[in-house]
Each structure stands twice: as C-alpha cells, then as structure tokens.
Amino acid sequence: MSDWYDETLYGDVAQRFRMGRVLYRDKTDLQDLVIFENPVLGRVMALDGVIQTTEGDEFIYHEMLTHVPILAHGRARRVAIVGGGDGGMLRRCLENKTVERVTMVEIDRTVVDLSVEHLPSISAGAFDDPRANLVIADGCAFMKETDESFDVIIVDSTDPHGPGAVLFTEEFYRDCKARLTPGGVLVTQNGVPFFQPQELKDSHQRLGRLFKDASFFVAPVPSYYGGFMAFGWATDDADLRRQTAEAIRPRFEAAGLTTRYYTPEIHAASFALPAYVLAALK
Ligand code: SAM
Image (cartoon, rainbow, N blue to C red):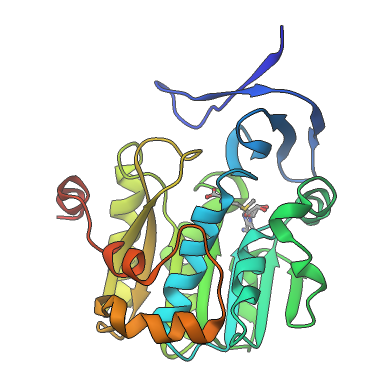
C-alpha cells in the first residue's frame, strides 16, 4: 500500500498525490520541505503542505510567468525573480537569449540546494549560467535596499502565509515599482481565483493603487488545481498587455525559444479573463 501526499492549502477541498520514493522530507530553517516521486507527474516538491512544482507540468507555469512579461516588454535585458527556489523560472528567463542578467532573490538556500540535487530537470543548469545572479535574502528586504533596476520583476513566491506573506503587501509592490525601469513590468504568482478570490481582489487593489495598469493573465496548471491560475500584471504602460500575437511573434522568434505551452496566440489570449474572474475584480 503506497503513501499519499495530501495537500493542505484549503480547509474544505484537497488534492492528493500518490507518493512513491520520498527523496527528502524535513524542515528547512524556514519551511517544511518534501520532494517525492509520483507515477504521473514525476518528481514533486511541496512546501508547508502546498504543492510548489512538479517535473510533469512545471513548463506551463514557468513559460507563462517569464515569456509573457519579457516578450510583452520587448526590450527586457535585466530581470529579477523573487522566490523561484526550484530554478524553473530562472531557467526559462535565461532560455531567452536577449536577456542579459537575471537576479534571483530566494529566502531559503536549502530549497535551491535540494532542487538542484533532486529536481535537476527543472533548473537544467540555470544556476551555472554566467548571466544568473543568485541572492539568498528576503525578497521584501532586497527590493527595499537594492539600487539595481529591472525591466521585469517576477514574483514566484509561495502563497501569502509564512515567509511568502510579505510578498503580497502594498509596501513590497511599492518597492518593486521603485526598482522598475520606465515601462517596466511586475508579474506575480497570484493563486487560483476559483478557490482564492480574496487573494486576487487584494492584489488588484494594491497594485491598482500603484500602477496605471493592473490586471491578470491566466493559464491552467494541473497541479495548482481549481481551474485557471492567475498571474498579477502591473505596469504604467497600459498598451503592453493589449499587443496582438502578430506583434509578439517576431520577438518570440528573435528570442530563440522552444516552448511546450507558450505561443504568441496563447500570450495574447491569456489576458482574456473569465466572467467570474472579472466579477471578482469589480
Ligand atoms: N510555483 C510555486 C507557486 O506557485 O506557489 C512557487 C515556487 S517557488 C518554490 C516559491 C519560493 O518562494 C520558495 O522557494 C520559497 O522559499 C520562496 N520564498 C517565500 N517567501 C520568500 C521571501 N520573502 N523572499 C524570497 N523568497 C521567498
């Protein structure tokens, strides 16, 4: 009889994953971390009872949260990632050959080390790329103190509890905005609207008070169950999220990207929000 991993993100609904070999299960200095094998999704990582990434479907989330803002911006050379300990976001940023430097600010060194050891297919060597700059720090403190500026900031955080809570605050968003170059874009992991509508409303209000254009784009990520996953979108250039697939395609081709989910058509369509999501934003 094999074990099951029960996600504990919600109180009244839950998903479970058959656990094959458990590669790691312990507390880091900050979080409960488990990495195990599942027959369908490959290797899976969870933090504090919440699924973070799987080998099987990581490409959807990581391709969308990198290629959409970077290709929409059109001239992004310096990117920041806050969180992203598994290295998937770093890898996808660096696959874009027009990106010159990616600073990744991750609070928990153990997540990085164990991801490189047990989930090497996700980071795929990204941490060794000379354009990668890994900083082990609280992303909130980093954005307050750094004098670096970025064309795109990607918040690839855990959910708003534990160390991730500060990454959903207006203070953090304000400090991110101060670190963006003119026309820069901030994007965020913003939960599953069907089960986490308040997280969406909160981010929309906070980002809306700071940026001329605050909205969301979506993609279905099987292991973040509950329908669409929402990604926060914030910039002072309101035209950026209204670009057509035809406008994006030359940049996609110039970037030399190979993708399994992202296409210029998916990019343009991802900003079309379902009526229930629009209603939650009213
Ligand atoms: N894809 C996942 C999701 O949608 O929930 C997120 C993956 S990634 C593993 C989340 C990372 O955020 C973790 O490595 C965690 O250590 C990091 N993190 C949490 N709070 C942080 C903070 N305040 N500063 C920097 N990194 C943080």
